[in-house]
Image (cartoon, rainbow, N blue to C red; front, side, top):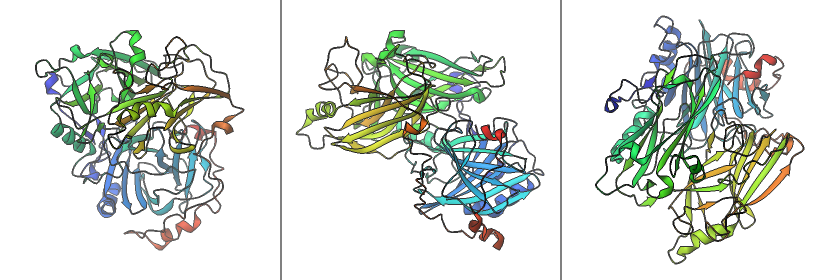
Length: 600
């Protein structure tokens, strides 16, 4: 069910948020169906839903009656799911790295094989799902009746299997959410689904009840902690009747007309939420937001990413003692918004007024958050061609940079900073990206997008825990490309930038923010602080096997046993023994070429 926030302050009927989220009453899901058509589903909800702490509805891209209701409960190191769809043949559900088919970890169920639940994964987009070497999902119960298919399953949060995604704690409102994906159909075997697909992002570990949606929790947090907000939305932008389109907008501080105390220009941003036009939300695929000097083309080189959104993401909020300074220096006096529109049906006449809302305080908070930019944020490789085939560009920011920035306060106790979030950015030729932190000779942390998908999230928000960076630590930012074009500013050209959100904020030489770019030859050395410039290593790879992906490689070892069968209300002996059938004879031979688009 959508959650709506009135936008009366703007004098328009536009809805500020239209986001699928948790609802107190799961029987209200599938809103286009009348009660008679939902009778079997409602009966299941009344009997089984109490076994699950949380639930959400992921609306389909197609008719209003399509979608997937997802229920879950975390019990120790095990997560239990139930997925309900309108189908008679098969259903696929799983965890996606970026929100699409590429890099997804799946559980596949077919009514024609009622005792089997197949653990599978997908690497490249539009490829056939591959059977995991280790079958880590347990089938707990199923219901296939009168056009409904409901599958209950469980697995360990961390199976220690390279062909599965570890499910990480996503409670914090600034952390990356968990990305769900689902597809279904009426054929006996998995086949092309058309519009019978859905995706969403949820905070799987959030402990609030179903009486509040995740959006309501976030909004209450932001409204209680803020002094105000300002909106950046489009004004009836004509969505082009083309399959994919990137629209850029920029506005300066003066254009937002923020009501501040006399003489004050700086504010402290504490969070943001997406603003989606209900009528055109289906076209808004993702967007990214940056701060920059002004709205001139030259200001690209002062740009700093502050937010990236994809469907299902309600927004974010910083901790009570941390804030992000905005409009506090000459290099962040404007906000740049890039929206990716997706219009596969080539619909004409759609007018969109989507964007986002920034929440802020007038006062500074205890800690200022900052963004470290590493890799090639200045696009110093502008115009350089990227070879066909697979290539690797690795930018190393030496430990002398962090020593220079953090060593300024040698007598102040803890000289380190805490990394809260990381965002990895390439364009359409990018296939994998990592950002490593190296201490001495040891890699102590790796932020990774193993199957980078620009069309799902142009800026990938990494799912990870916070960690410390200390003086002397170095960064190594590596981008892998396939059949590249050249480096440049457009989406058809390439970039390699890691945005690292941290606190407390530090500064380089003068008032420059902490950055470690690959500098053009005409820029003096030590511009950003002693040793703050990356060294580039470029390698041509033989084939995809040298991409060094961790996802998809199990090393043929099953390192963890699947969770034991969970006896649930209404589950008979037949289902209790179903786990013993998993993976015995099933090999997915029936996944024909039609399965190339099984999810997104």
